[in-house]
Image (cartoon, rainbow, N blue to C red; front, side, top):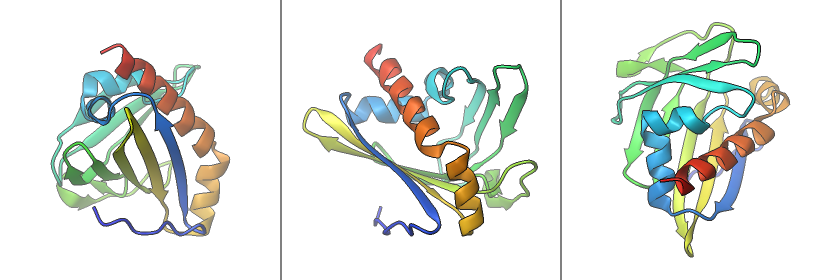
Length: 160
């Protein structure tokens, strides 16, 4: 994928180097049975996941709070570059169907996976429509939450 420079006023970026192979990171991101094990930062959990790994395919998850409340999210995969790039959005449903977001805000995630020595250079970018939405996502704990989830992804990947 041609990288577009993030807009610091609209986008949030998490970059890390992790000590698992790109193949394992990709597998953890694209296999529903694995994704539910790491996707929500503890003590939250992911109770379900559906992935149709193709442009226009579904990317649906349900997260559960520590209090037991469930938060379903329906999304659409925009781009799949096997082993290296996954792009999905909550602004569209399966089949590229526009949708409204109840209780949340639409954003697009770009997951970039690159070899780095024996590990992986991992970049997660969240694109937002405006600065207010970006700020809301940041204040919700984007860096901390997505960073914690990445640590959990590494745990899962190392167990494979």
